[in-house]
Structures are given as structure tokens and as C-alpha cells.
Image (cartoon, rainbow, N blue to C red; front, side, top):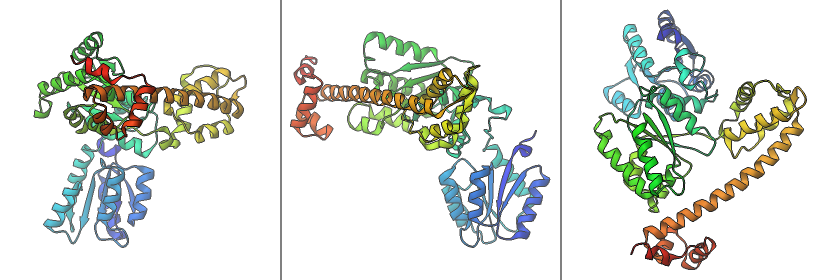
Length: 429
């Protein structure tokens, strides 16, 4: 199947004759065409059918081509937009392309030129649908969500980019799964994919040895929770990034992908994260949404996890049970959903998991999630205070200013965690 055969093009024009002409030209070239007579109709079709390319007229009643582009670009910046107009000027074309419009053609346009522009746009907008053979890289990422679709398109484009990449998102949202998928579709796919946890205690010699070994042995190295990486190792990491020449365009030996649930900007501002390393990762960043932000995927994920669970007494969920799953808050995101599905299928003694069982499991699991969150908050608070005292050499007044707390409140925080500022002054002697 050619690229044209696989591509759906959305054409937008309030002139029915021109709309039919463009449809005929594109259809004869093998494309599948969706038509819209207005900007609002185009938005609805775009969200439902997710075309590879949009071709739109500029002058239309209501929402014109520029306004339509702004709406489309905000939702899906990787989808190319070609604007057609009878009123085009060079300044219009320059301004449009500077904002991200892929191409600008003046009517009457040459049919061959239109097809050439569409073909070029298609080359930059690869399909990612999971049923396509060339999308095997993301087969484990189950989604029909538009935001996830856009995320995967961008991830596919960045898979071979040698510069460091940051994946930001809540715990359990699938950041490591996305990193593995990007490794699988990159030129490094046959090289090792290694994960290094950057939790507390990574500044001792044993952790440093693991860090060096992981860095030197990977094709892709995933630094999990990079916001918790000890400052000495941050220095080593930035030094390695600098010596690989990533920013001069030469390919490095190791692709670095990092994950975080926190704001690196805040960590850099507070002195817990090197500013130069922060800017290295800000060049490429993807945000993985929470499960609550893509609830439409929950039935698909439930079916996927049930199929992976193998033969159990229960083979699925009752409509009431599925409704509960779709409405749950999911603080633990996809990871938590998978755990609930597997537990429910293992405990049920009837063909369909009942709502009563799901309700009980959700209540128990949410209690565990909240307890784990409280433990994580306490651990983060301890590490944050310790890093502040370390960076300020035990100067409580300076540390309190950075933390935006008065000294009395700051001393109470230190006492709660049994932290003695004098110890950090002694450590420097």
C-alpha cells in the first residue's frame, strides 16, 4: 500500500464546486478525502477522523483559514496544514509559515503543485495507527485518545533525535513504556535499553559505579525520576552530554531519556537541580497525560489487560463494574488500573466481574495509593530540606529564604525530620 492509499486528507472550503474539484484531484491520486464546508465542521471531522493533512481555504465565513489553523495547531501541532487562497500575498505566506502553516498556495492553483505539496506533507505526518504493520513499535500503548495520538506522533519523530529527552507526567502514566517504544522504533533498537533509578542514596560510590556502567552500556539510557539524581551525578551527566557534542549536531553513543513527576524548573530554582542540565532537557520534552485526562481509553485498557491476564474464572466486567472503572479517580493512573483489573479477574467466581467487587478493590487500593503518596511526600520533603542545607552550607536563614518560609516555620520542618543544620556545616570541614 502506498503512502497515498493510507492517507486521509481533510479539505475545507465554503465553495462546493472548488471542494468537489480538490476532492477529485486528491481521490484520483489515491488519497481518502473528507470534506468540510466550514471551519467548525472541519474541527468536528478532524477530532473524529484525525486526518494526516488538512487543506483549507483562507477566506471563509465564520472561522477563516487562519483561525482554523490556530485551533488545529493548538490541538495537533504535528499535523501539516496547507492554506489555499485567491487573496494570497508574499507577506501572508511568510507570516503563515512563520506560525507553522506547512504550505501556502494561491488560487488558481496548479493541480500537480497541490499534489506535490500534499505528498511532502504526508512524508512529515506518518501514520501511527496500531493496526498498521509499521506501527508495531507502539503496540503496547493502548489508546484511541486524540491527545495520546498527537503525543505518539511527536514521540515517533523524536525517536532518532540524539539530544536528551524529558518525559514528564504523573506516576503510573506510562512514561517508561513510551521510552521503550521510542527505543524500539529508533536506529538504536538493537542496542540495550537500560533503566537507572535516580532515587535517594544515589550519591554513594556504589551508585556512581552503577551510573557509569549503565551510561556506558546502553543504546538508550532511561534515567527514572531524574529530579532526584544526586548533584554529583548531575555534574557527571552534564559533563557527558557536553563531551558527546549533542548540541553541535553529532550523534552521541547513548540516547538519554529521563522521566520526572516534578517541576525541574522549580528544582533548578531551588538549587536541587543544575541549571545547565535543566536547559539541556528543556530542548525536548513530552508530557504524558494522566489516565483521568483520557478516560475514553479505560474500556480499551480494561479489555487489553483482561486479554493479557489469560484464562480466569471471569472473562470480563459487567456494565456496572466497567462504569465504576471509567468513573474512578485513578491517582495511580494506568499502573493502578492494571492492578485492579488483574485482581478483579483473579478474585471473581462468576463469568463477569460484579460492581461490588470492583467497588471494594477500588476503596482498598485508593487507601494504599494515598498512604504511598504520604510516604513519598515525606521522603521528598526530607530530601529537599537536606539538599537545601547542603547547598547553603547549613545557613538556615538562606535556606528558609529559598524555601519561602519564615525561620520559625523552617526550624519546625527541620525538627520534624531530625535534621541538624550544624551537621551540614561540619560535613564541609
